[in-house]
Amino acid sequence: MNYQDLLTVLFKNSDEKYNSFNSKLLNTGVKTIGCRVPVLRKLAKLFTWEEVIDLPENEYYETDLLKGIVLSGASLPFDKKTRILSEFILSIENWAVCDCSVVKVPNDEKDNYFEFFSSLLSSDKQFVCRYGIVNLLSNYLDDVYIYRVFESLKQIKIWGEYYVDVAVAWLTATAMAFCRNQTVEFMQNDARQIFNVFSYNKALQKMRESFRVSEIDKQWTYSMKIVKQK
Image (cartoon, rainbow, N blue to C red):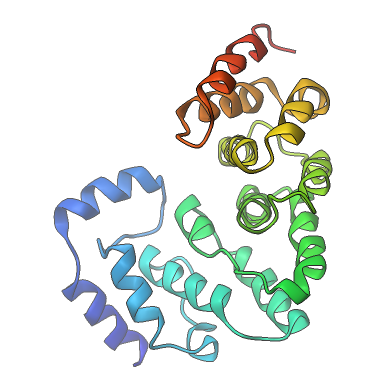
């Protein structure tokens, strides 16, 4: 399927109402077609990474997302895949392409991928940084890696970028569900020094909104809120 044929399929599967809603939610300058993610995931199964690697960047949100899904799911050696991903993530300009392009890390390569994803947190590009955060969130919130994940957050330089701050809050709230004791310890100590106030309080808010966090812990979050800005 060439690029023009792909666009034909995407436009055929567009939904005008969904497109109007989704384009506002995405907060993107890239044109949108209005094709839903499940359709894109089905289409992605028809492509190899070689077939999407040269798709135009940021011409349409849907083709960017299709490319991200295919590349993140490609079965490639670590070195080759991370080279490809490193180039791709530089083109990401919205949260949805970032968050839908998460890698499912093989168990025998977890250490290598951890180093790769954590290295992205020092980037001055918000969606490169966010890409590292959401991949840590998706693959490393367990007893083996949780302290290393929290330590890696010290590398973030661009606090105040909304999509970075919210990703950190999302990661921390999810950690509360999977590594409760370590996360409580972190929030009581290092997080107060590492996070900005918005991210810290947003993490507490997301814990309260989570169905995986106990009611007792939700009440605890109120006592942890930072009231005054640093």
